[in-house]
Amino acid sequence: MRFHHGIELFCCGLLAVSLIGCSKPEEYREVTDSDMVEDHDHDHDHAHTAPHGGILVELGEHAYSAEIVIAETDPKVTVYILDAHAESAVAAKADSISLVDDEGPISLKA
Image (cartoon, rainbow, N blue to C red; front, side, top):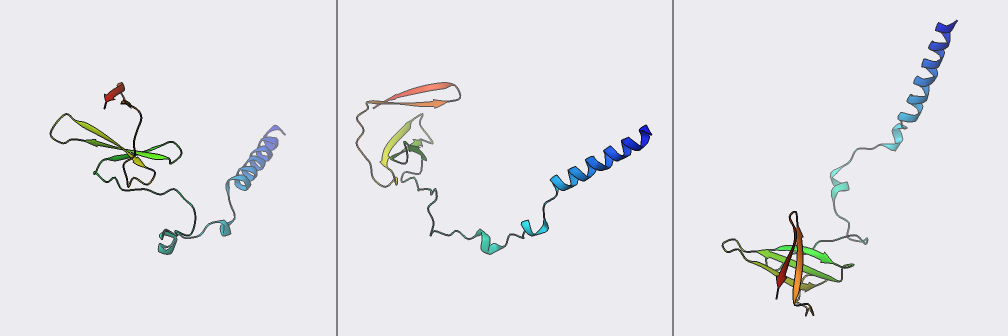
């Protein structure tokens, strides 16, 4: 008798797993090339181009951008404080800025 209960439990478990793990076929569809086309009629995150060829970092809730430019030949880093769309420079009241990398913070003076 004990053997039959084991088979019944196994069958119930198999049925439960198949019902939970399997979705209905109509929930899936092929992705086509037209699905990959960007639709700009909706609100979404967007990217801006760094005007000096550096790396853009969003500051605040898309209020400002910082562009970090690392010189290829000298040990020099320049940080530009730009508007939200990274198009124009904006005045900053700070006389220094802190960057944080894997080794810790780095303070840059204006």
